[in-house]
Length: 401
Ligand code: NAD
Ligand code: MG
Image (tube, rainbow, N blue to C red; front, side, top):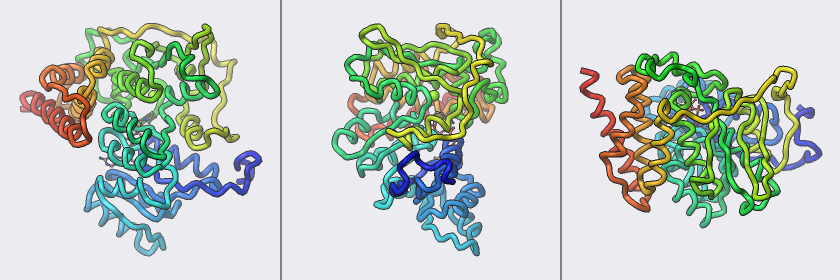
């Protein structure tokens, strides 16, 4: 493995990792990076919601000290699966287990790759405990952005973006003074329905929504990409991460997903970060920063790139984008209401209990009906999340009868 070890820096002690959500799309790709650089990392904690079979294989391979699973029955299954393997990890359960994994004294770096609101508290606690967090879980920043900011200001923690657009912006900003940023352009693939007629959106099936043209990802973010809520969440994520105003963040549809995002500066210069759509590149950068490590990821082949297209998003076809702007403008718990309503609506759509166009409809109803609380505490965010989920589930009840 010498070929892949960190250029000219052998002898650096390995970094101790906790990977929250190790069985998901980001989690498994993080483990692929660790396989490429085995001398750089020591995996101390792995966690999953319910995919115990895959987690057991990961435990046998990476030998963590601690594993967290979503529920007690999964802990029992995991214990059985590990009998006679020699793996002796401590098994912890639920949100407490995630938080324990994220704050262990023997962990330096936490990869936040849980999907949804469930990732918020462990990431906050990791930052409060002074960990470096490589964050994929954008919902954490959407819901709890101000608490994350406070944790960063008070503690020794540090946040590095994994989301490809935010990694691109972060890479464009290396060596630049933040005040020289004029505006940020977040690129969006436009998802599978960019060219589909709006009149047929009511007929969109789950398998059509899960068929993303450029990226292979978990189910929730794939549906978010199809509704373009993903880009709405990313606008909020960019605002929180880079401390810019809303009107400094522009969304541009770029169907080839080669330009991952761009930054315009006060002298008229524009920087962009490009590459093939492969999450392993931003995951690795969040782990290697400030270094770049030589890696065999796919290279951009310019003989195959004949054009790069850009167009404005269609606000009528993709109302989720506007809903996200509305929520961040309202502030307080409004982004938490937006996020919870979206998570609940996407679950209902995946269960085929509501249609595709019911997703933005449900979110709009929830944002209209539930009034936001300003400057929320963590408890108030939990209450807003719970209330908005219940609201959307109740909204869907007649359709299921
Ligand atoms: P995924 O569904 O593939 O994986 C989610 C992981 O979280 C799994 O390990 C699952 O077991 C775990 N999990 C789910 N619910 C949980 C709960 N309640 N408690 C504990 N663990 C739970 O999702 P993903 O596509 O890897 O996305 C993870 C996060 O990264 C999301 O926030 C997503 O928006 C973000 N992200 C993903 C991609 C991508 O390419 N997949 C790109 C950018 C950002
Ligand atoms: Mg993204």
